[in-house]
Image 1: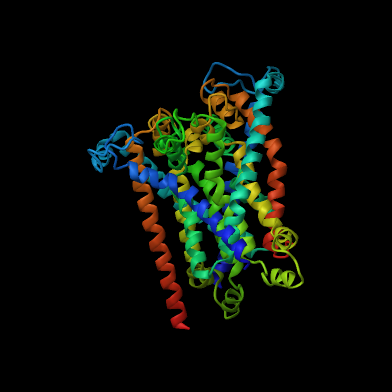
Image 2 (image 1 turned 135 degrees about the vertical axis):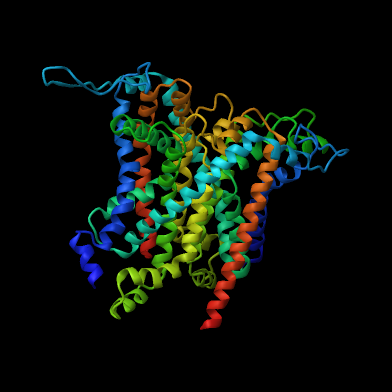
Length: 275
Length: 305
């Protein structure tokens, strides 16, 4: 590559990653700051862990985190199953009635503004309650249904792109040898696409854990998720406990990403060794 | 074999079941809801729970009265607040998309042209912020931009400014927030497009005497058209309806349509007006969504060029 151009690209990469990471690092650094002003470093008493202790004492945040965790796990599991079925339909059945509609309904949520999805789901829950008496009121159930609906689209995309790159000849060979389609799915397809399902599950978990707008529409009294509590705090300005929460989130995500990357590298090595 | 015929006798083949379950779910919770929003957008506001009047009423004598109320739409068209909010949202989303492209394209290009080992690490670094919370990352900018925030403190310490610059709660802060949050959505489709690029074309162009910028403009840019379009849609469409970023970083007069919908719904309890806003927003965005879908179809078909 041209010398001058590669220098330009290098600068762009440096600037871009600085832009992406300076805000994140600033939250980590200031989570150890003793001052309540958050961004004014109190060098006499810092670094300190006192805001970490304060977070562990904050029942409002802990309760909301527990609600979010429950919703996120159920959502991720439901969205993975539905997304797997949808992704499988779209990539393995080339022609069926309504394929276009299914494709559209799994693409649209990827870009649909959240306020629209949230409003439409809430109005649907209200209409359903009037019509059949379920879901009675709004709470964890409605939040979970809403989350599954928007996050399954992301799982579908992940699974679909994995299925598109893997050779369906393997499945066909097993079928020719007399294996039942269900058996082919569980013995051949599922193990091969398992990493995609896992990343789909994690993606759906993260989207649910992080969602503010759709949860706000779908939630009722007493079912505030973590982002809803964080949002109402953050609207009033910066708070040291939120920096601690951010630091913990970043640490967990980073550890998870590294272990998934290592696990995948190991699986790839084992695969190579087997061949 | 016996099992399969049993399922067949029940009228359910495995294939039907696989297609039907996600299909019914999406119909029920994704397609039908829009019909309900459309319905509510035509009803009267009422001081009740839920705060709207039914559209279909029995008028006695086996008569059914359907009242379509166009007032909500009329209201949106007569009050210039909504119109300017629409225009402003589209403007903000468009400028943010261009800024994302300007920052994201060189990054995607650099990642696609680096060695495979570094490439994976750089990709991981692009995706990592996306996996941490969007809300918390937007919040981080409050700490950086506010009057006694990090940027003002550094600038004052360096002696470049005497008074803190007013940055938080401005248009500037909103643009930074949107570009920052949506950047990975621009980089990833661009990268997956550029990754498939045949770089020998560039060498050939150079051998034939093309200047580097010329070969970029004449070869790389046109070939990455689908990546540019896909990334731009992924930024533009959700950004038009964005709520969190204008609410946290934008000023009180940052008129974004997502924020207006939110306020109509939560503060004014005007559900029919909020529904009418949602319908108009959808009418604006659906052509872009269909465009996005056709770009995706072309890209996955592989020819794309």
